[in-house]
Image: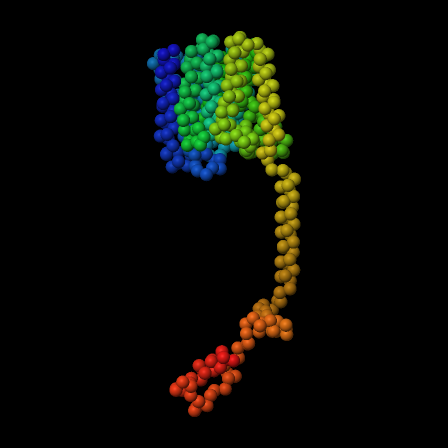
Length: 416
């Protein structure tokens, strides 16, 4: 108990410090988030969470304070390898099928087939893969993935403590503390982000640890408990899949159609959306933990499923995509305008003479009688040409001196 508190405290401080220290190198190396923002956000948070969790847990296992056991001893290397794959995806754009394949291969090494059996073990591999990818999808807004991860880790750690799985409980408590230290920098507005490295690692560890805790129990009850522990991630994944299917968009194409995006469309602030999602995750995890311990019946999980269904159906009505008919109509209008403009230009090109001579300046139109009268009324009498004014005789003097021909002519014109 004392070691668990000390390990959680050390993980919280170490994660917060590492996330801040790795921020500048991540910015210099260009390891930043690809979402469109007004400023660049480095992906140093995920690497800080992974390093903190592995260092603290391995130190406890090495010194004998909290032995991990055989199952957890295989879980941590698999999670670390998956985090490396996520880091590669953060640096270079990997296709989604490589992430799915890598997550499935890592999950195949951590499922306890002796307790689950081959068929249930295959289903567990698929479930771990889906949860890990769903947690990566939760990293669509500041603070969402970290908050849901902290709540889920505490709930799963409580279930592991009930089953006297000390290694699993310590691992999950350290992960929760590391995510809490990361949230100090990721709370909206975020200074660091989790990225695929940290989100895949957190989702994989949570799902694999929950499967280890529930292994050997009833299949139906175990599936209900696992669903309740990860209800928010499941709701986000189902919401996005159904919305993109109805809109005719590719499933793997990103867009502002996740839980936090729709809550923001309803008028919530960024912090308010994170609080609402965290409260929903807390409710699902509480039901799952109580059902696991036997304080609530298995039918309580159906309330969680009903809540997820209501949330999905309600948020599907929030518009997040533009109307496809309007976009198509605007595109057709622009295309038609371009075709008309091209036809006009082609017709004008056919009218240009082929000799290559440029047309001369257009003659100025002679004003009519009405225009001349109006111009004379506005501008006065038309100025006569100086060449038409006769020069004065040589003996003509004004003001005691000889008058210049140009000045004299100018004065005659100005004076009428």
